[in-house]
Image 1 (cartoon, each protein chain N blue to C red):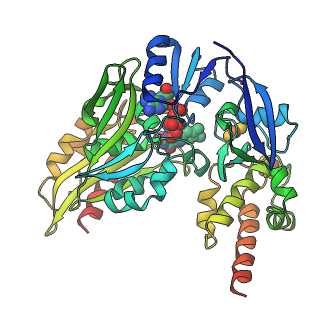
Image 2 (image 1 turned 45 degrees about the vertical axis):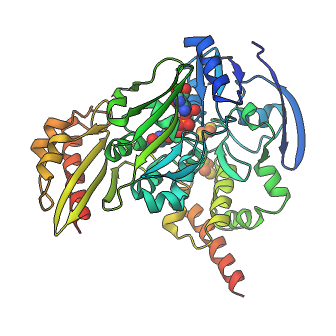
Length: 279
Length: 162
Ligand SMILES: Cc1cc2nc3c(=O)[nH]c(=O)nc-3n(C[C@H](O)[C@H](O)[C@H](O)COP(=O)(O)OP(=O)(O)OC[C@H]3O[C@@H](n4cnc5c(N)ncnc54)[C@H](O)[C@@H]3O)c2cc1C
Ligand code: FES
Ligand code: FES
């Protein structure tokens, strides 16, 4: 199908973009990579009156290390993250996760900011941001505020973003002594995950410290599996966290997998990830 | 607000200017406005890869890119890449290996394959499969397509060593 008609604006500055979003309210919609939005338009699942294209705004791109944080601009493409030496060195989890997102042609266009704003519960970046305890820089006419990833994701495609506010950057604390693993089960490469896991920990003498387990596909939002994390904390890799994961996750059944299957798979991923973190 | 804009971009090396509606995606622009019907439309929501084209040197989904977003950019389609000879080796290998039947997926396959051949000369069969994971073929069962691309990679590696 074809998209319904809409008007299009390509502001050059953040200020101008925020002004347009403010003036047009619910009628307007940001477009970044378009890899989710244009599909929604073509399927007529969305019908905005005005698209505000943020691709010409300076200052929304780029990857840099600022003090003790890795800062990634909202417009940075999935593929840039996948291929960035700075990311591989300072935040290997993101480099590990990137190849799981869709396919090369989609990763060339899709942005991290778009993925965060969309908040698909099966998407890779939101779960990584939870595990990494990232903070989002959000900008509107009123100015800038910072919201922790752990307070940002509110449910199915729901976030703490306010009307006329945009994601400007993602800040990730550097964790030089942590190890990371990203695991995902999907029916075909590039498909959205059935279940996936972003895992981090600091290994020491066979034990794992500051264990972080963030799931995608584990419920209606990305989920930090707090009970499982607690159970794994300070210990050698656990073999079975199924009881804890049953408390943490509430996976939704889909056409191919029952919720119980997904819970089982989540436990399999936890076991593999913890073993790899300690190895 | 105005619902048309003037768009200027370079397609297959030629500068073109047209008035378009913002809702027009790149693949319809190429096919309907410019008559470049080599790139195909399958699913129109990013899943099948039939619409794969190159924008500023990287492959994208023609159905998920708005034409207006390509202002000032360089777009290459299967037509241009055939005329320039860039695709010649792949086309020959697809032919020899029987890597197409109905041919619907082929333009997208070729453009995606060229991207891999150029960026990853040492790619394995596994990497070929990964790179083409976003391109569906309903006829060949993929084996012949992977064979054809591997043939080109092996040939180019031999050439590079010689
Ligand atoms: C076939 C296919 C498979 C896919 N598979 C996966 C997958 O496995 N994993 C995955 O994570 N994704 C997948 N995607 C989605 C892809 O990663 C998108 O690129 C991503 O979800 C959105 O990024 P975008 O830049 O394209 O955003 P857009 O499509 O431009 O926008 C998405 C939404 O976010 C809003 N938005 C965009 N940028 C901002 C911003 N800076 N501030 C505030 N709001 C903003 C838009 O208004 C819109 O509502 C897939 C897509 C397709 C078509
Ligand atoms: S038509 Fe674009 S991916 Fe199917
Ligand atoms: S040859 Fe028919 S779809 Fe690929």
